[in-house]
Amino acid sequence: MALACAAYLVNVWLFSSQTSIHLSASISPLDASFLEGVIFLLAGVLFLIGSGGITQASRKAALLAATASAMGKDVIGPSEVYRRDAWKPKGYTGLGLTLIMTGIILLVIYFASI
Image (tube, rainbow, N blue to C red; front, side):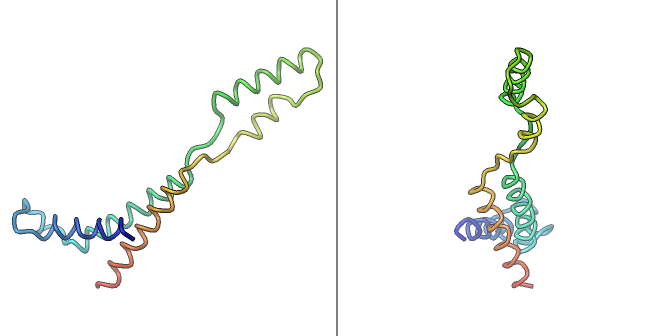
C-alpha cells in the first residue's frame, strides 16, 4: 500500500507540476498510474515465476549419474536428473507479490477515479 501511494504521489508531483517539461500536456497523473499499475503487475508476475530449468549443477549431477551408471552402480540415470530439474521455479516470491499488489492498487485507484 505504501509503495502504491508513493508511486501515485510521484505521478502527481511529476505530471501535474507547472515546471514539468511539457509532460503534463501529454499524460495525466491518473493515466500514468494506469500505466505503472500494468507494468508493476506484469513485473510482479515475472518475478513470481522466476527462472528455472537446467543449471550447471544439474549438468554436473547428470554427468556424475552417467559416470556412476557406467561403472556398474545402480543409480538413477542422467535422463531422470534432467527430467526432475527441467523446471524448478526459483522466483522472488516476496518481491513478486509486492509488485502484483502495488499494480492492483494502482489499477483500483485508476478505475475508482474515472
